[in-house]
Length: 394
Image (tube, helix red, strand yellow):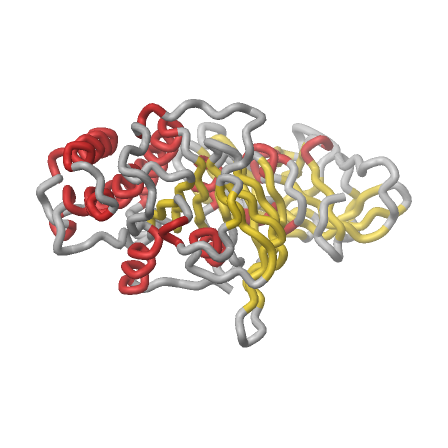
């Protein structure tokens, strides 16, 4: 279950999270953040967090995660997986039913959002429409009683960092979506928080601008060396932004790891299908007599892991690791019937059936489309095996 926010709720949440806290006015200079020590205490610890609503619905089920200093962790999963609810629990916008959340070593379960030393960027920007960009950036600092010269310096520094100096005297309605998102980030930067929270901040932008802003967020976070949680349903965003990915499903953690690790060794069929575009091929198979079979066909290139018990399994194969070639060129493959070709520019996808199972393969668009009787081949090292019932990796 995921809690969604309309524009009014976003504004209210922004007022709660990004409101002035009782921190001293002479906070350290933003750009001077030092690289964290490897042994430093995690910025955020989520320990056995549970969110249960009065109607009995459970949105988050015993989640335990740590976010290291200067680390960017992405919560990713489909709608309803609990990622936004978990982020709002960290922000203090959702109560915690069980477990504990600690920020910079301090338990914050009962701490008000404005006192948690966090800053949050929302999907709908949550800017004050009657204020100029300059006033939006300065608002929190002004309410904290920060010196005017210090406010001016921090606003100028954030504006230069985000390349919005030319828009400081405009109001949000006069800005593009990308410019508004930069202002929302700038308002967080001037607070110099311990933790950034990004709640699907790029969802309202077009594809080209999303790609540009994704890179800007990553570069900015690395420059500031501030810990961050980023929530998205887009696995491409997760892969390109994260130091570590947390894949959520049904309120539970399916897998935590570096993007390359999660992609190369998915912990379950859910992760295998969710991470990667196109998704991993997941093919029902059976191990019997030391051989792997798909339907009536033995898989000649499969080498099941030693000690794997006979029975039904799910065979996983990434599209880019599969090869379709004419049978006359190479023996030992599975018969493959080509049904459709999807052109993607530099590459193409070949959709077809191998031994009765739907299979997608990826190929270089510069190569000719194979013709005639075809066969599917793969390196045994590129095959993944999952339990047919639980979906867990074998």
